[in-house]
Length: 412
Image (cartoon, rainbow, N blue to C red; front, side, top):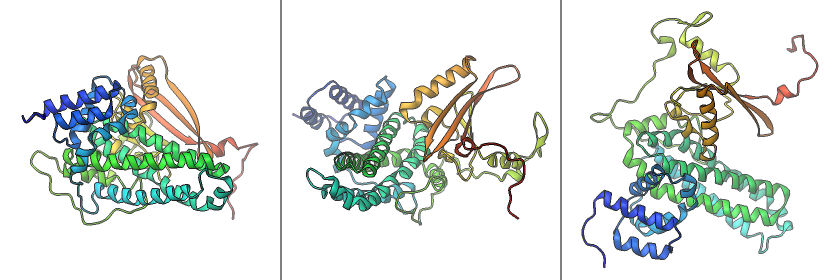
C-alpha cells in the first residue's frame, strides 16, 4: 500500500538514490518500477539531476552512471511522461534546442527507414543504390555536433555554477558515443559494408533519439528551473560562435530585467576604451587593443588556464581548430573536456604544478590534416606555477615544406 504521507525533498532524494543504487547492483527493473510507484507518486526532472549529482559526489564514476542512464530513465519514465513539456519563446536557447531536436528526430526517422529498406539481411548491392541518399541523411544527422557543442560550451558551464556537474559529465560522454557511432557509420557507407552500415546506423539513430528524450524530459526542465534570465542571455550571446543544427534561432525572446540580487548582463567595454593606456610588458608596451589583435593574428589557437585550473582566455580567431565560446571563461578546465580525457588533463596539470614537467606535446589527425597541440607550464620569475598555456596549430602544410624559399612569391 502506498505511503500517503508527503515526503520532504531529502526523503525523496534518499528514495531515488536507493532505487538507483539497487539498480546498479542488478535489481530487477520491473520490481524497481513498482517500488518507485509505491514510494513516490511523482518525480521532477531537477530531482533526477540532483540524484545523479549526489551519486557522483559520493564517488560513483560518471561512466558507470552513463552505462545505466537509459535504465534510469526507464524507471522514471511514467512520471516523466506526465510532466508538461517546458515552453520557451523563439530565440531563447531552449527553444532553439527544441527546434533542433524536432528537425533531428525527423531526419533520424528518415535515416532509419532508408536503412531498413536495404533488406533483411541488408545487401551490399542495395547499399550501392541507396548510398547517396544515406550519405546525405547522415550528413544532416552529423550536424548534431553543433547542438552538442552549444550544450557543452555554453549551457553546461552555467549549470556547473549551480553545482550541477555530474549529469553534464554523463551527457557529454554520451555525446562522444554518438559522435563515434556517426563516424563509424560514415566509414561503413564509404567502404560499402551494408551489414555494418545498418547495424551502426540504427544504433546511432537510436542513441541520438534517446538523448533527445533526456534533454526534453530532464535537461531542459532542470535548466529552466536553475538558471536566471541574465544567465540565459549570456548563453544566447555565445551561441552563434558555435553554430546550429538544421535550424536557425528564432526571434522574439528578450531576457527580462534582472531581478533582485541578480547582476545585470555584462556588456564588455571595447578594448580601445580600456583605461590605463599601454600595458607594460617585459619588452615594450602595447595597448589592450594591440595585445588582442596580436593574439588574434598569431594563426594559432591559444588558450590560458590559471593556477586554479580555471580557463581565463582563448583566442577567438576566425578559423579555430577546436571550438570555443565565451561560456568556458571562468570554467574549470576539467569540465571543458570529455570525461574520458579528464585523467590526462589532471596528469599534465599535476606534473606542471609539481615541477616534474614543463611541457607536453600531442599530434592528432583531424579532417585529413595534422594538428600539433602543445601545453606549457607558465612560471613567474620565482619559479612559481602560474598556469598552463595551450597552443594548437595545423601543421599539415608545414610538414610538406621542402628545400628553401628565399624570394617573395606574390603574383604581380
